[in-house]
Image 1 (cartoon, rainbow, N blue to C red):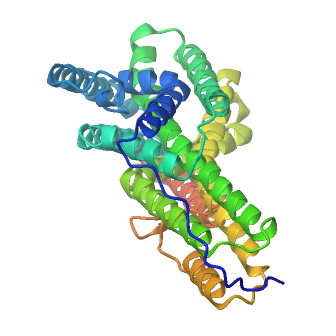
Image 2: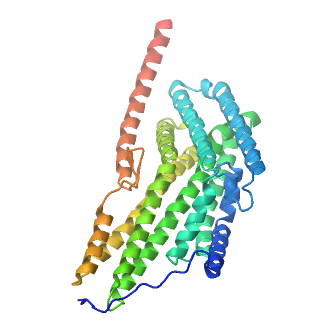
Image 3: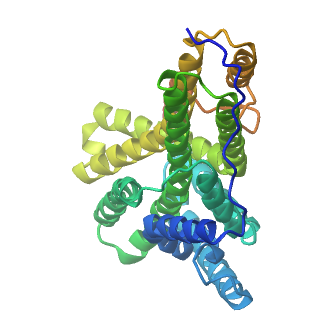
Amino acid sequence: MWKPKKVPRKSPKALPRGHPALQQEYKVNSKRLYKGLQWLLWISVLANTAPIAVLPGRQGRVYRHLHMCWMIVCYGWFCQASYWELVLNTLNKVSLDCYLNAVESAIYVVHIASILILTFQWRNRIPAVLDSIVKSDLERAYTIKCQQSKRFLRVQLSLVLVLACSAFVIDICSQRFVVYKAVLSINSYVMPNIISSLSFIQYYVLLQGIAWRQSAVTGSLQRELQHVQFPRRWEVHKLRLQHTELTRFTKLVNTAYQYSIVLLVIGCFFNFNLNLFLVYKGIDVPEMTDSTRWLYQVLWLAMHMGKVHSILYFNHKVQQEQSKCLALLNGVQCVDPDLLETLNHFILQLQTNVRQHVVCGVIVLDLKYLSALLVASANFFIFLLQYDVTYEALSRQGNSSKT
């Protein structure tokens, strides 16, 4: 039990913004941020998933125009190669595979376009966003851990590298080493998944950073409530405002990526069900599928499941940190009316749903969404089976009538 203390307590005076000590800390934190994200930023700029202004010293107009030309050339080549893949390869497949592959390729074209548009839209705002992250970290006394960030990025980039190498090798083997078919297939189906994976690594980094900072806020709150004899109201209020800022930033991140998330979920849904159907056909008719095709389908199933699960998992981590903070506040017993009012405001803030994990008003980014996807996938798989049986029956009837 805490008792109110009548002696007034003042918060420490903050240093002015232009103070040399703050400027030095700002430079140090900024260097730490760029050092921890250096490899990701360079790879993202080359893959057109981030504007060139994200790199230090590359905010000039010449750099922006060069990067814009690079984006136009890359997307033009991608669209042209996707067209020839459709004409030379996709249209020669059986009816169901042809339709699903054509839809999948169209989704990839739209998805890559949305990533490029997002990159273009943030070309002027991204330096201000990074600047605000560094400044807010200074205000909450959060120290950026370069090694922790590098370790996280190393794991994510390694997964993309394994995906790229495996997909290249398997795709070339599945095309019987025919060069033009392998190039068109890699460009139309492998490269869009690599580019979207690189784009979403940035998304994962942002959400993981939010979770780390929320954990730091919760730790500061716990120390204030449990290890201080008389908790300071202004300190609890400051932590509440910091949590509000992180919640707003979470909503900003999900809003910025909302269309890309929806397109990725749709593309993963179609591709997952197509490969699941092909796996079923391979089990039903083993002579129609070789080992290379099996590896290709298993790799694609794992990749699409991993993408969707990662999006929901990192959003869940942010929600989990919020739940920990709420549980901590609910366990506090306080008799100071002023502090109790601040704690009640904090609890109400955490319990209020501001829809920071909702994209396009239709998808709630939570692990519970996996069950809805599984139900939809089961229904779609049943539809594919019925369509395949009906198509085979009509084909046999048509052949018998001709004879």
